[in-house]
Image (cartoon, rainbow, N blue to C red; front, side, top):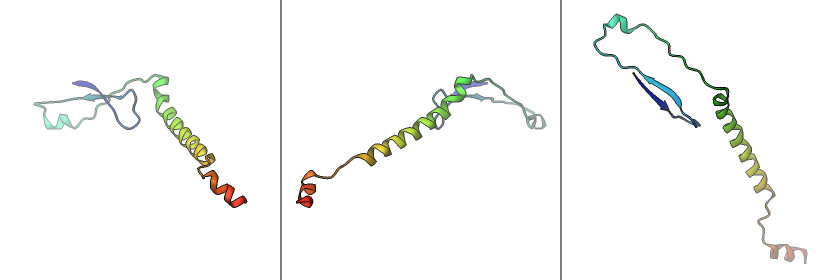
Amino acid sequence: MEHSLYFSTMDYMGRPCVIVKKSNVVGHLHDYPFQVSYDFSAQGLMIEPLYAVGVIFICYLVAIIFGRLDLRFKDEDKKKNA
């Protein structure tokens, strides 16, 4: 039995991964299911949703900033007004 951490998309702390290896097992005993349970803290459950909300907020903030930027040359404005 091996214990490790599995990292996937948006995993900051990783998820527990248990690898069970069997050898010399009778075939009909191999088909029975088993269950592994573990506990997460409340803070650990909230990390991924907070990351998603933060990324969406930053994207909106960047869009607002780029929407308000004026990238035109000032000389062109003076020629149009004259």
